[in-house]
Every structure is written in C-alpha cells, then in structure tokens.
Length: 130
Figure 1 (cartoon, rainbow, N blue to C red):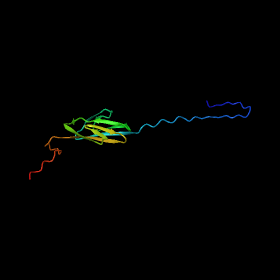
Figure 2 (figure 1 turned 45 degrees about the vertical axis):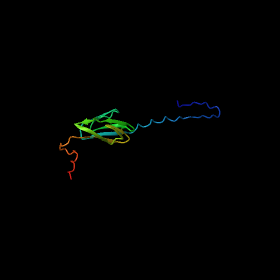
Figure 3 (figure 1 turned 135 degrees about the horizontal axis):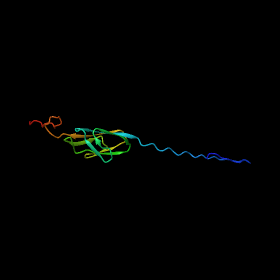
Figure 4 (figure 1 turned 90 degrees about the vertical axis):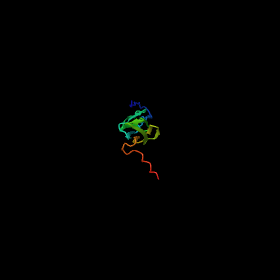
C-alpha cells in the first residue's frame, strides 16, 4: 500500500520511492484507403492473395500503412483483353503490387482489340500509298 507507519523515538530518515507508470502502448499504425478502378471493362473481378480483392470500382478502407496489397486482374473481362495496371508500386504481367503508405488508387485497363467495331479504339488506318 501507500501507508508507512514509523515509530519515532529518535531522529529517523524515511525514504519514499516512486516507480514510474508503465509507458502507454504505441499507437496503431495509420490506415489508408486503397481504391481499385477499371477502364475498358466494368465489374472486373480482381483477386488478391493479400485480402484486397473485389469487383471494380471498389475501395478497401482501414489498410495499415506498410501493407503490400497484391492484386491480380483476369486476362479478359467483358470480352476485352487485359492491357495494363497504373498507380501500382510494381507490376508483373497482370499482377499489381501496391505498397500502402498513403491513400492509393490503382487502375486496371482493358483494350478492345476488335477492329472496325466503330467504338473509337481501333488503330489508325495505314497511310495511303504514295
């Protein structure tokens, strides 16, 4: 306890020792939002070995700083072929690795490779012969 009883019959020195309270626990790491969007296809089912998958466009909130989100896009979606990822920290084929240190948006892009479908994504025609 914190009570000391001392019988005083002569000069006496009493020493009180205080111990410091334990330090508070460290704060949790900050969390951020990972947003995954798609271009050229909608409702793309993105899989993730790190638990960050979903159907575009979607956002994962509460992602701890320092997390590496690993996202895999299907090779085709909506009849269109996978083209690229943007906004990723690293890309290997159709796999995006997003290192989360702030709010981050990544975008998977699909291309329609069908020519002459009048949707504006066909390559330009060759120049006329000279």
